[in-house]
Every structure is written in C-alpha cells, then in structure tokens.
Length: 314
Length: 292
Image (tube, each protein chain N blue to C red):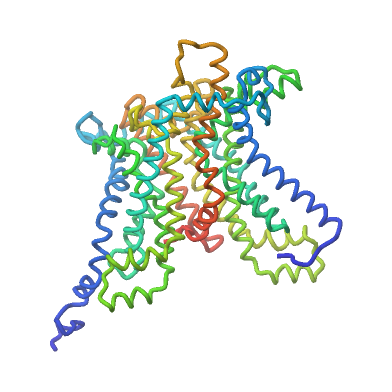
C-alpha cells in the first residue's frame, strides 16, 4: 500500500468516508433542528446589529444604514433609561437578598423531617406553585389584596379599623409584592437542588458527629451547612449572573402607570419603546446593552465559581 | 442522615420549629387556591359585604355557569389546549431529533454545536429582533407564532442529551451490526428506553405552552388568544366580560367570582394532573444538570 492509502479499508474508503457512511443518518436527523436553531436563535442574535442601524419598515430585520452608536448615545442621555436601570438593579438585589436564603433554610428543615409521608406531602405541595402561570399568580395576588373584597383589606378594615389600601397600585408595595410572590412560587422548587446536595452528604460524617456528641442543631451547623456550601456558592454566583434578567412577564403584569416609578425596569422599557412605540432600533440598543452586561456577569460569575469551588455551569 | 433518636430538649425544640415551618409553608401554598375556590362559589352579596374568607358563603355555581356561556372563554380554552398539544408534540420531535445526534460525542462538529446551544442560553437576540424575525417570516397573526419559535428550549435539549448519553451503548451497537440504521434505532430502541426523560421534558414543554400569554399578546389576534391571555385581560380590565350594558353592582361583584372561576378552571388541569406527574418534574432537575 502506498503512503496515501493509510487508514483506507479494503474498499478504498478513507476514515472520513467511512465515518460518514456509518453515521450519515445521524447527521441527516439533525438537519431540520440545526436549521431551526440557526433561524430562531442565531438570526435574532445577529439581529442585534439593528442597534447600530436605522430601521425602515419593510426593509428587512437588519435595518438599512449604519448609524454607529447613535441610539446608545441617545439612551445614555435618557433619564427614563437610568430610572429603569436603577429599578432593575435594586429590584434584583433586593430579590437576591430576601429570596436566596429561603430555599436553603427550607431544604435543611425539610431534610430533618422524620415522617416520610409528611415529608412527601410537603414536597409535593411546595413544588406546585412553580407550575402555575405567572398570570394566575398575579391574578390571585390581585384578588387577595383587592381593596374592596380581598382578605388583607378585610382584616385591615374589620379588625384594625383602618382605611383599605390598594396594594397592587401603590409604588411602595411593588418591590415587596414582587419578591414575596417570587418566594411563594419558587422556594419549594429551588430547595430541590439543596435537598439533592444534602442527600449526597456522606452519612459517616453524621455518625462521626454523633459520636463526638453533636446534637441535631450542631450537626446542621457543622456537617450539613459546610457540606452544601459549594452548592450554595454556585447558586449565589448564578443568581448574580442573572442580575439584569428579572421576571419580565411578571413585572409587566404588575405594571400600572401609578407604580411605574419603581416597576419600570429595562425589559419593560424595551417593550414599551420597541413594541408599543415602534422605536425598533432604539429599543434593540437598550436590549443589547443589558444583554451584554448580562453576558459579562454570567461569564464573570462562572469564572469566579470555578475559581472558588472548582465547579461552574459550563 | 441522623438515624439514632436524639431525645434531648434541643432536638425537641428543633422538631417544633421544623413542623411549624412546614405547616406554615403548606398553608401559604394552599390558601390562595382555597380562597379562589371560595370566591368563585360565593354569592355576590357575601363578597360585597366582605364576608368571604376561606369558606364560601351563599354557595352557588353562577360564576361557572356564566363563564361557560362566554364564547370567548371557550375559544380561549380550546386555543390553549391546541397550543399545548401541538406545541408539545412539535417541541418533543425537534428536541429528540437534535438531542440524539448531539449525544454522540464522536460526530464531527458535535462539540461546536453543543457550544452554540449553550452560548445561546446566555446571550440571545432580544425582544425586538425576535419580534421582527417572527413578523418577517409572516408568522404574526397565525397560530404558528405560538408554536414554532419555541420548538427547542435549550435547557430541555440538554436534559435529553444527558439522558441519551447515559443510555447503554451495547444494544445500539448490536443493532448497527445487524444492519439497522439510526433512523430505526431511534424510534425502536432508544425511545422506548427514554420514556422517563420524554415525560419530563414533555411536561416542561406542556406547562410552558399552557402558561404562555406574552407571545399571544404580541403576535396573535383576539380570536387566537390563549386562556392565560384571556385571564390577564379580564384581570387588568382590558376585556370586559358579559354585556356591559347591564352594569350594576351585582355584575361588578359577580365579576370577582368570575375572575376566580377563570383562575380555577384555567389552573385546574395542572393542579389535578400535577400530583401524578410530580415525580417526572423533579426527575428533570436531577437528570439534567446543565453541563455540556
């Protein structure tokens, strides 16, 4: 055999030819999904160039001519943008501070429940809100807090003899309600991750702690918590990475003109300027800006996570 | 896990705290639903007099009778069922067809495709580019706008890929030696082994399509609205139910019951099916750690 024939089989096929002969069906199988992926995930990504180009109706989704950073300059000078930016950051940070510890506490306590059946019931019911539509969550909240008939105002009026409050409309309650409804919806679900991490703890550690005379409290603080600390760190870092991506749909559902001073976040601003007022390029620029910050935050926090715990998300 | 019975006082105190927290959590999760049921079954008079708490007062089914006479509620409900079934079916097909090849690390370009998938989870085209894409494809105002753009969710895709990767390769190799191609291996050998993963991912998709409203808002005409968008519109007052000509206090308070009745009927499928499907939901989280 000559040098060029290295690796060829008896039919004279090269390794590459053999590879495709063997696996062509797998390649063919993913043609449609790959095309789909390019069209519906990557074209919109490339569509972000609209932030640097002028949009004219009917002239394509990528716009017509380059205008450089015109739209970025414009929103940097727009107080509405900075208000939305501040609102996004404060809502997000408050959300992390208040909702991050809840699933950890819940998981640790749930793990200490000794009755199997009761534990199962608690788990089943506490995961359920995760599957309820945001629309339903907000609709229920609106009814519970309704100034005319809601449970809370019944209590205020009948027991405390105070004036009813229109909670969903008052700016000072918006952040609390956003955070509380999020905690209601996701505490049980997020606890699954910590529970899984707790079940992976080597039981020898608990036995050793017990021999050393550690009670259940001490076992929680000296065995359980340190053991799930890496998981906590990864989750926290991920949370920080998602700082700018709040639950846009929920904020949009809770948005009213009277609470807009705190409820207008970057995403609702993009929605309003883009889809309501049809300033497509301007809104794309704002969206791209927050998308890039988001990407920087995610990759930065992932690096940090790998550095600290040796575990990242990709 | 501590197996030996700890009978100290601190352990008892801990038990009290644990059970108090757990019972509190249960109540918090359940009470909103009970309150909704109660409102939907109460008489307008009891509601306006602020008498309705967790037990319905003046039980009647007027609100449910009412919503079933609204043609737009029925249509919206039917739309949602269609979006959920069609959307989940399309999404499952697309996800499986992509995930199976992606689980074969020896394929050329597999690594790059996987990187593409993961990158798109962290940096996506924003709202506007997506909107312009859908309208330039002339999907706006068609029911496809609710289905096609969401055919592959990257998170679900990765769950499937990881599941396929974990399957034993021997059966597949035996089938290949017998001259059976991948087109028949996938439906005949792989899919029957993957019912748990398919159920998990299918449920995630079904819940997504059932709960979706925003895409309906920006892409659809009123007649194509899903039930969640219908609910959102009656809650924020964009849509008035029934005939507004006879707007008395009675219809105003009846509307509270009606809202609650819509909340209950639109959530019922999830609440009823949920306990049976729960194990699959949870499996998804453990099967699919988000790793390339």
